[in-house]
Amino acid sequence: MSDVAHDTSRSALGTGLILAAVSAVTFSLSGPFAAGLFATGWSPGAVVLVRVGIGALVVLPFGVVALRGDWGPVRRNVRLLLVYGALGVAATQFCYFAAVQHMQVGPALLIEYSSPAAVVTWLWLRHGQRPGRTTVAGIALAAVGLVLVLDLTGARLDPVGVAWALGAMVGVSAYFLLNARAHTGLPPLSLAAGGLVVGAAVLGLLAAVGVMPVTASADPVDLAGAVVPTWLVLAVLGVVTAGVAYVTGVGAGRRLGARPSSFVGLLEVVSAVFFAWLLLGELPSPVQLLGGLVLLTGVVVVQQGEAATRRAAPRGTVEPVAAPD
Image 1: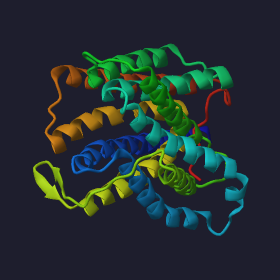
Image 2: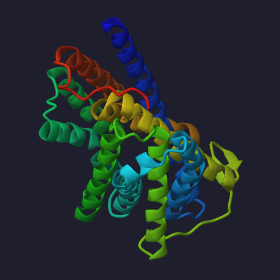
Image 3: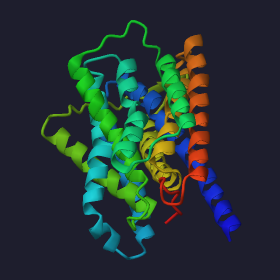
Image 4: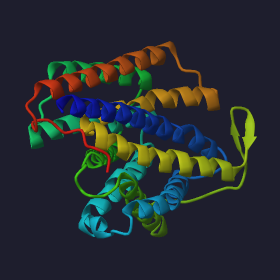
């Protein structure tokens, strides 16, 4: 019987790693596609609003079907859905773009992607889940790799920008922590759908009151030397980089837990550099390539450390790997 449980746990971990990688890669596509829209006159607020709005429209029907007519989990988790949508979706997007209005992209991303360290600290202080030595070593490697990938040469910090970037970091941390809450009764599709709907509503409100400027253009977008119609770029942003990314992110969190899934999420940085080269012709430097290897090594080491912790700890003392709803 224990062998069956072990195999099931390993299967859940393997599926979780695949879902986390898919989520990271699909999230990373948003940068190059959004950059193409920015070049034609779109404002960051307009891109984010349309992206999240399309994602909500696409995922919502699947989220409703996943409930199978039982709306009880939604009523019991209204606060969770509001927090997930406001922090994990809207605040993450809005605060990041507000940050880059005051500082360079590299430092803003570095602060935002320090979220795995925040997740580790929260789980340690709040739930007593102390990371093992191997996990800590992986964290250190991932941090070094992240700094190298972002190539912060000559970067300058602005206090206002730092504050907004910290807000984005809080949003990303909430995203990973709430994804891992497996015993809410909400199917992953329903959590993703509810979060996207709430996030779209919050962003729409920010746009309506003028806090988030919104400008758009119908001009086609230049990607990888090809002229792409605006509607296609928006479809990819909404369906792939929002819908698929959030759904697979929730699925990964349910199977891996918050700590491991947050570090696999760092693959988004490496993938973003690759897509920037492929779609925008921005060739990564040797330092960035080295940083990517170091970061990937750190992620692997963290996963090994988490697996060792699960094997060594008594049942119930570490964050459980949840079965799919």
